[in-house]
Image (cartoon, rainbow, N blue to C red; front, side, top):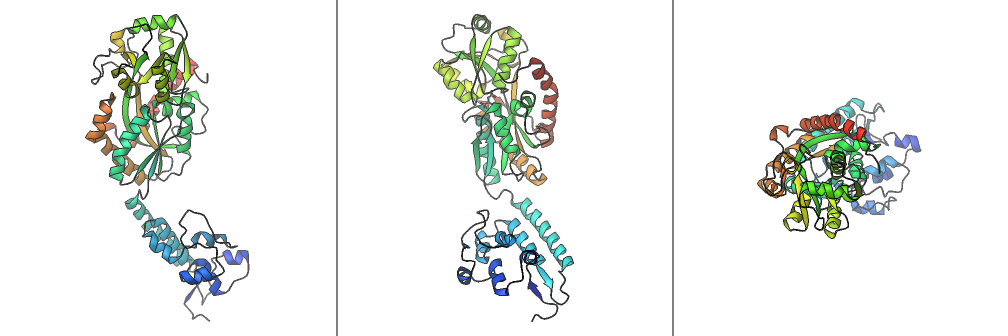
Length: 427
Ligand code: ASP
């Protein structure tokens, strides 16, 4: 018999729902409040005391709610308070399970108070602790290409300031929309982020029927460096200037390598075709890194490729460069003329990059990621590594999540009508 005013662990409703009350001994075993040894020998024999969170329930029991909570106290010790959410939720859950035996009523007010305290403890613990494990950057193009290069440079520095590893996952296909979709549908907890660019986070909305909304399903984190394109060709092309290249392309069907329908390299090629009348046949790859292999090998003729990918090959003499799609020459490649100098005035293509999280990512996580990204953009090692590849860095004044969101919005307003009227979707 329990004394009035004391508490006992109840079945928390689940027991009443699923069957008659069971002996205290059994219930304790289910909740994992017994010693490791007796737990092993209890009827819950299938519980593996060493299993971790997220490895799925192993307790063969009708009371499903208990299965998730059935972590032995030793397990909690082993967690070393690495998972504050779990600790707080378990505390709330346990306290909420108590009932006043005298009245038989659940201690609702106390449970609510406990829940609120636990939640507030949780949020401050999460705010202080994020990130507690590795983060994944989803790069929507092949490894080794321009977006991948930016992502890896930034990730290296961000992982130092966040004190967690950052894994790059290349999820390529459909002009990057497969990878962006993967990130959009990930849990909004700051552990899966989307690295993308002007094409994946602006152009694709006009090219594809996406299963996500580029503005409403993503949380902007930070703007990342930009790159202009180089107009490059395989070594054997018999043209030494941009005008000669245009003439050469008019005389034949030119195979132009792209990073996929709607990618920056594709849009550059299509704009070039409508500007010059050159005939192009796009050959789509999963990024310009694999396309570059074929350009060097002579399987394709021309590419509109970001300097980060093609400049090393131009420097090695493996391919030819005709112009850079910017108003000024690249400091790091001053021999390559601008499009204005090469006879194609104002043919400017600039590919900016960015970092996004799934919609609903908590503001303090967004802020922490933004701070880490800003730090990375100021890191001299990152700056040197990307500047030499022809990338330029955003003004720190444009470093906020809101600035990236505004840029994306204004670029959508500018480019969607152009892309739609050019009718360049889905070859
Ligand atoms: N972003 C692509 C890549 O990383 C290139 C492109 O869009 O042109 O391969």
